[in-house]
Image 1 (cartoon, helix red, strand yellow):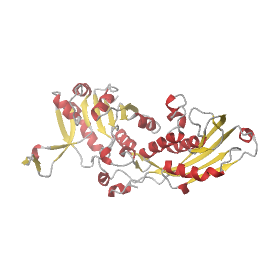
Image 2 (cartoon, rainbow, N blue to C red):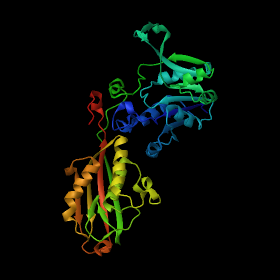
Image 3 (tube, one colour):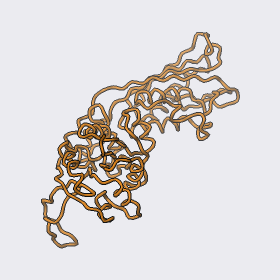
Image 4 (tube, rainbow, N blue to C red):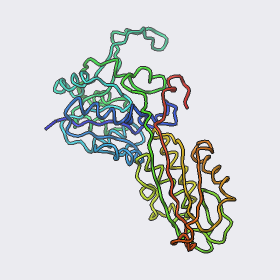
Length: 379
């Protein structure tokens, strides 16, 4: 059995990347970057466990991709690492950042081969440029560029991080705690993705696939007298609404399920359960806005949506134009890419008896095209 656990840190907000998509959710061909990095390590060495540390909302999505161990991060890299270390019971732990995207297998091997030689094994690069500190040149031969992954003795690293002192990497913490550090050769290929221009230095990240993702949603709600009616975020001028925990906007609920289905992110009941009092009588348009934000942040863009509203009553033709405009704004797409159809049930079934409404929705998503980020031109 392997003596090494791998921790991959992915809980950062990526503020320096300055994109609506978190860098860990950029798609490389057909998989998100965080998963490509995890698979790269998985194929490079035998690990007892692979732990992904991220925000809880991202973990909920990540679980649909791969069966790794997932841990909720903290408000700093160090806090996130401490959380991850609680799950480690092997004598050694390797720690890297998801942003270190293209770590060569040979570099990982060099680090592991040296694991018994010090308390922390660190890949480094030499400094080739002249360096100044406080206006004075310094000897570059005495400096090193520190990289990750770093491999540490687990108990020593855990103890080293039991402090309020903030360390920028594991080796600094181990050294401050009196542990030994050994350098091994790093690799220029293990460049860190920090800013958009770094994308041009990372050839292992492939352009996103042109794959189209399709999702389908359906929802049904009965009428309730005396409640305001909302459909597609628009108030309908009738004296009854929908029986529901939220405002009952059956069209938006079907649309959310279609979007989540295309994204592989579950369903509306998982994200916004009707057992949660936060969503009692809530405006469903707010839930749609939140869903769109989640989808955009996780590397997906909305192509178009199509929905059919089956209602014997009320009459919806006067509202269709405003419905299209309202949804277009919420989805962040042109109005012509929002299609809304309304039909009756020919007086058949519960819809025909004017007892409620059912809506069917289809959504198309595609992977966010990040290629122009290299030129500072986000789409």
